[in-house]
Length: 87
Image 1 (cartoon, helix red, strand yellow):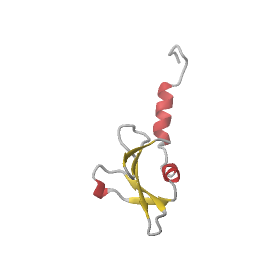
Image 2 (spheres, one colour; image 1 turned 90 degrees about the vertical axis):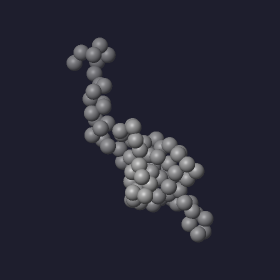
Image 3 (cartoon, helix red, strand yellow; image 1 turned 135 degrees about the horizontal axis):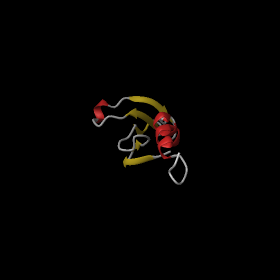
Image 4 (cartoon, helix red, strand yellow; image 1 turned 45 degrees about the horizontal axis):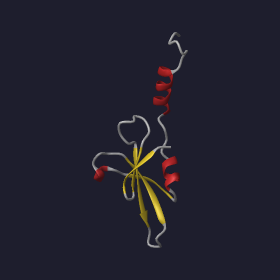
């Protein structure tokens, strides 16, 4: 599942639409220096992002962000069909 590192401990989670992130993941460490990964809603202004979940690994945090299956279905229907383009 795609995510892009945009800063030292910040990742943009990319799904559909592909022109903007759908979520952000912030990596922090607690007092015992145990890494934690917080999934946040996407907003261009960082102060308006909200934490929605906490995970122990980056992969678990990324996996928690769901795909918009309606968008995937629309793209699949638009590009599926015979090689000659006839339906």
